[in-house]
Image (cartoon, rainbow over all chains, first blue to last red; front, side):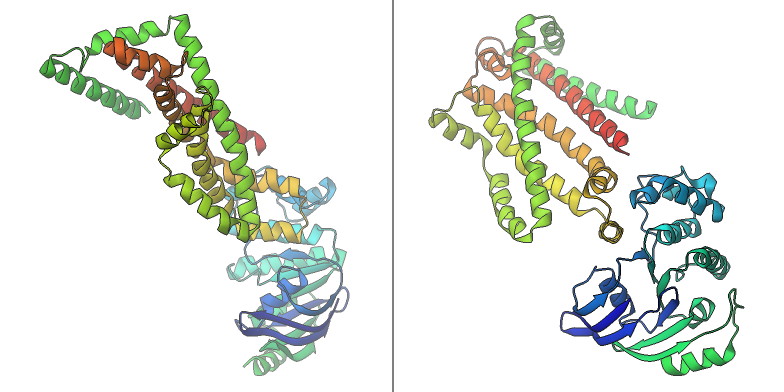
Length: 217
Length: 247
């Protein structure tokens, strides 16, 4: 996916300012930045949910939203088939997350963590090679976050989609990203690779943490 | 449930007790007829063929007005949600329609020599349409913007969006609007039929009863109340059932 001279505004405020970036196929890229830095706007532009100037080249993506965005009136199975997932993908996805027994339940009867797992599953099995993720772990406790990251990595390893993941949390970037872009005032301020193998240790890679922190502050 | 039924029965008893007290105090059959005699007369109405024929004619008018209002309300509400310019213009039309004195319109319609039998339909439509438009518009506007975004990202076909997202969200609040619109429609149509003295309708029967028999007038009013309640319950039940089947 290639982005050239991307500019997006909210009213008079320029949120993305002539941003240029290329995302490598099959890589997990984390866009790290403070609130208001333009992270979510970048994803919205890529997903065509916001008007912008510039050029975005690439196929239409799937999206892991910050909140699960499941339709409460229909079952988990119907929520997944609604977006075009095949029966075999739904079954194997639910099986890999140990959630086969939840297939005919309504989202309201699931826990917050289970709902977010379905949100991930929907994006991972959607027929697209690009996944956008907008701070999907921000509302989860640490135990749930780590288990969800591990589940995500194990499914992603089979499919190897291009993942663009935004967060303000350095630890999430260190756990999940192969490449980190720090975004500041609508521009890429820092770009680095993380070559540690998956699964990664929580609070590992002290050197990278310090480096990212120095560019974030 | 039992408590609710007891409260409802209490309400009915209160009305009849008040009526009885008024009947005993006023002591004038023309002004306040006997409650027992009236109830007897009301129950007898349900055994008469002419009553059913009048009821059919009145309900037909209500249903025609309701269907036209509902279809138009859905169309205008969808257009209002889709195009803000249309919403801006149409809000004024709805505001005017809401504030129009309906019975004055009936008189205008009668002066314009429109048939007496269709005039109540027009009055019922003019009153129900703005109510239903507002109800449908609010219900559609309340559908989650986040879910709509989700459908856009995942390219969910419009038909699937309608049946899985819009209708399940829109139908429950709409059930209430529709059932109260139906009973309101009956009230309005009967009033319009009285004013237009439409022969062979409930309103027509009431007009005749007001001249010849006050007891019959009260009995007809009770019968209309019972039918209004039955229709409100059936309407609510049918829409709820439809909402569940769509899921």
